[in-house]
Amino acid sequence: ACGVLAAALGTGAAHLVAAIVSPPASPVLAVGSQVIDATPTAVKEWAVSTFGTADKPVLIGSVTLVTLLLAALAGALHPRSRLASTGLLLLLTGLAGAAAVLRPTAGNLAWLPALVAAVVGVLALEALVGRLTLPEGTHGRPDQPGRRRVVALGGTGVAALALGGAGQVLVSRSRPPTLTLPTAADPLPPLAKGVDLGKAGISPFVTPNEEFYRIDTALLAPRVDPGDWSLTIDGDVPDGFSLDIDELLALPMVERDITLNCVSNEVGGPYIGTARWLGVPTRELLARAGLDTDPRDPDLQVLSTSTDGMTISTPLSALLDDRDALVAVGMNGTPLPREHGFPARLVTPGLYGFVGATKWLTRMTVTRYD
Image 1 (tube, rainbow, N blue to C red):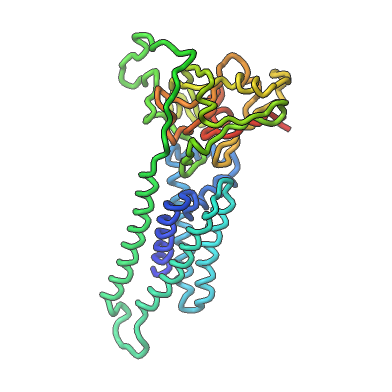
Image 2: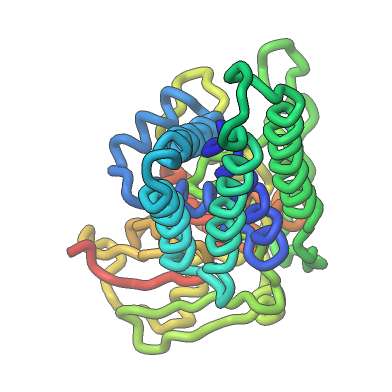
């Protein structure tokens, strides 16, 4: 119990500190993200098909359970070897620190939450064991003194929940800046009357943003400041370039109704949706980079990169033909929601999301699959 509560208190304190300095560096999130990165694609697809949108809570719960079991072992070791007990807690927090620091977008203070977890966890374990150990020569039943145990254990548990809860409140309340979307140079007319049948069991033609499915590898949706964002087009192009958000929004925009579908979706499943997207056609961006290769070459791809390091390979031909693939900034008349890629994402009609729908897009590199 002492080991579990000490780890919980350390993790709660670390989550609060992470909410202030770097939310992705929270120990459980950092370790969970590394687990996702190291998991083979086939296993990820199995997780999505088995757990659906609950895949992330299942992963976080699994990481938390393993952590608490090892923390319980640290508590059990303490009476026999304080060194071994402390070493196990430091190993746990050290792994969390390494996971946070090794993230592609790790900030300068990514190490701080793990350090807080280590200091608070070790001190809490020492304090709890000292508080609950009967003085030498004291006679009484093993559960004496009962009030001391209840206050120490209960108080630590409440403090852990309070710290973690405060951190979660800070994370959930922090909202990214928004954008003022330009008017489309090539707008779509309003949907024809009767497109939505209004029948029970049949979804509307356009899926509302709040109901649009979300399947990705980000345990915490990146918070991207548009003022710091840029899109780079590079690789096997003669005139690679970068755009900031104002330069992207100044380009001629088009509106397109595009359906996205997850590779794990079954017929009648929930992981499919249609939105009216506002963006710049990818073929225009690639033409600006002076692309001079044969777009029909099946060995050519565009490797797109997210701000959190996620990469996706898309056939070059799909980004140059008349399907109107977009670098999108708007979704159903509003700026992209943070969970759907704010401030810009890739949308490729006709391809599953995991090969054509990079969220939080920051780079598009023309290259070959080999």
